[in-house]
Amino acid sequence: MQQTPPHQSTTRRQILAGAAGVAAAFGLSSGTAQAAAADARTQREARTLLGRMSLKEKIGQLFVVEVYGTTAATSHAKNKELYGVSTPAEVIAKYRPGGVIYFDARRGPDNLKDPRQVAGLSNGLQRAALRTGARIPLLVSIDQEGGSVVYRMLEPATQLPGNMALAAGRSSDDVRRSAEIIGTELAAMGINQNYAPVADVNINPDNPIIGVRSFGSDPELCSRLVSDSVRGYHRGEVASAAKHFPGHGDTDVDSHSGLPVIKHTREQLDTIDLPPFRAAIARGVDTIMTAHIVVPSLDSSEVPATMSKPIVTGLLREELGFRGLIVTDALDMGGATEDFPPDVAPVRALKAGCDQLVLAPKADTAHAAVLKAVESGDVPESRLDASVLRILEHKIRNGLFPRPYVDEKRAERVVGNKRHAADAARITDRTVTLVRNEGKVLPLSGGDHSVLVTGWGATQVADLTAAVETRSGQSATALETGAAPTQVKIDEAVAAAADHDVTVVLTNAAASAADKGAAQASLVKALMKTGTSVIAVAVRNAYDIRRFPDVPAYLATFSYGKLSVASVVDALYGDLAPAGKLPVAIPALDDPDKTLYEFGHGLGY
Image (cartoon, rainbow, N blue to C red; front, side, top):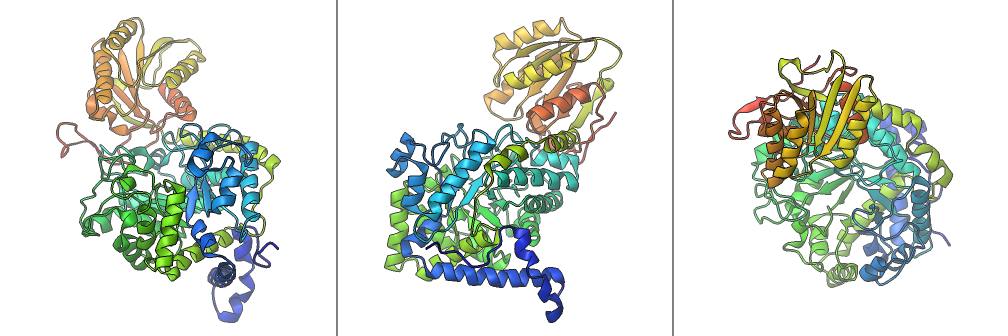
């Protein structure tokens, strides 16, 4: 018999609506009464479910796994390698995990082809979950942050600007609408947990992993927009997750490959890093994801935050009062695996206070380690139960009982629809930021122009060239030079520039100290010596101008998506007046104490 709580509603809004009638009787506001009644009912139902679960079923709920294939019945060699079974449905049946996480072909699982297929995969995995054991629905999760860096669902899903681009626009309405569109489309495909928004305050220009994923370098702006983003996801009926606690914004090490150390004092953490997380909690964020970073001022043992009880339990759970779900960042990242092998990391994270363990390597080893820890008393079963209760409450609160299925045909109608696309284009237009315009190079006017489009990104160079050529009287030539232009490519671009009136050069992470950035900067400087009008467009980090501060004109898009390219072309010709304001300050390359452009800087026409 299927074991589900009686009378469970199917959406967050319906859950809250049922409590409105008790407000007058207790003298409470309608919102307070709704929340209190829904909370009490959710807790009762979760405890009933917990009482029916075996120890192994409880442990299964802790894990969030990846599966390979486009349907629940797809056989894939990688499933066999990782889990000893062939299909995603068999993975669910074997481990009874609390959740799955989707990836596209860039990582390998290849879960994401088109909306109807994704909805079918979600339904198939949910059916597999409801046919086993305690029959608990899955959290189906994804990293769909928006922007050009961390996003899994490609077109036809609506492509929205990332956080730093949205911050350049400074519009709370745009942030909310962007998150709502993403959430609505994910929910239509049966994805009920988005690991977004990023709540890190990016104060380090050399940060290799956060950068444009952050709302910027100002804690107040980040806090406001993180709160707006959480609200938008909730409007879209998908759970939100603020990450990466306690703040990954001031590092020059990528936690995917190493273990960053954040040297902020507690006072600095309180003024810089923690405010966006406090704002997310106040807004009712569902989930907070921990970071694989060392913060000595919070834990002198210098273990990663994910493994730190003083940080996860002491700071997040007790001091900040977060009652929702705490999940780890991926446990297969270098910041977790460096000192914590597969039989240690999941136990340490659980002891620290994490509720769900994302992508724990060697699934059999990880499950056995947690089981052994609980059976031996190293981890009290009460500690396990506390996490499982929160997981169950999260699922109930987000309407996964009794039927977590979605309409597969409807997914096709919702994802990438015309209204979403139009809103995304308007939002993107408001993010373009004009940083420098010496001699009023921009907007291009006064008749016909021949334009050389060069620099980073084969697709982006081609798209921008094609867009220029659609304009009356304009001709354009595409010459992509790559992420690290060779001297041969630089010479070729210089020769081509001599035959054109204007050169538009795209840069991506040119401010980086790596050889690639230096090579891109050499290209820009060589083009500037040709005497033609040079317009640099930074399609990721606005910091690129540190490498070539004398470039005549400089636009920042914070994204290299199609919509950003289209907005840039409109800005080049004055059809769009750049309205963005820098969400970060840009320091000089040779003197970090000198500021080239202040936070909030932005020119217009």
